[in-house]
Length: 46
Image (cartoon, rainbow, N blue to C red; front, side):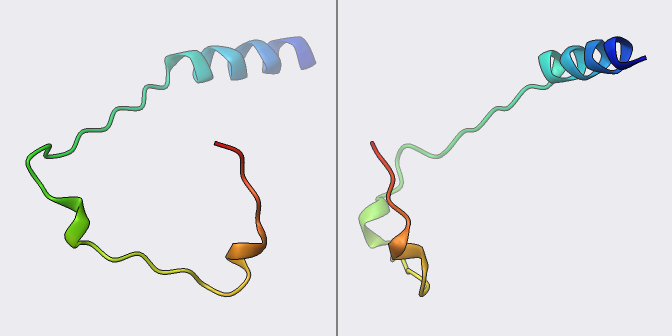
């Protein structure tokens, strides 16, 4: 039963697609960003 559930889960993940798009003519320098307390404590690597 576990093998069947794992097989279904893997097949569903393989089927999912994520797409994004944006208007390349927009000047993003005019947008502002904000930070909420606690978020600056999270360190990420680029």
